[in-house]
Length: 97
Image 1: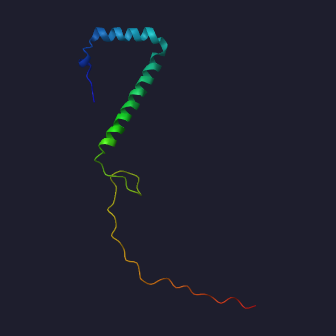
Image 2: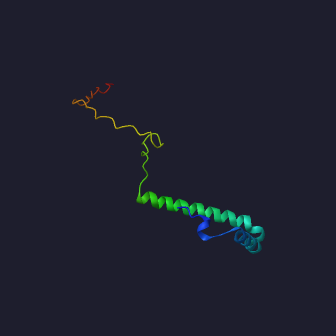
Image 3: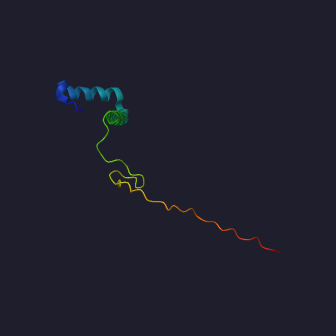
């Protein structure tokens, strides 16, 4: 969801005042505050995306068991017939000695 700045009616003079207040309040820490704010917004968007996927799963192909990449899933192989005979084990005589 994208909210344009025009929704808040923020113009150039208002932005300049906001920037000046930010510089006065945070001073040299302003880049650090901006970095933390950016990381917070990214994490918030990731959380929203996760909630949206829980509500409405993505329309992509599921991961295949062997490849580990999406979309590379192969159709399941048809069942194979197993031979009806059991393996035969022969016992060897113990050495005489």
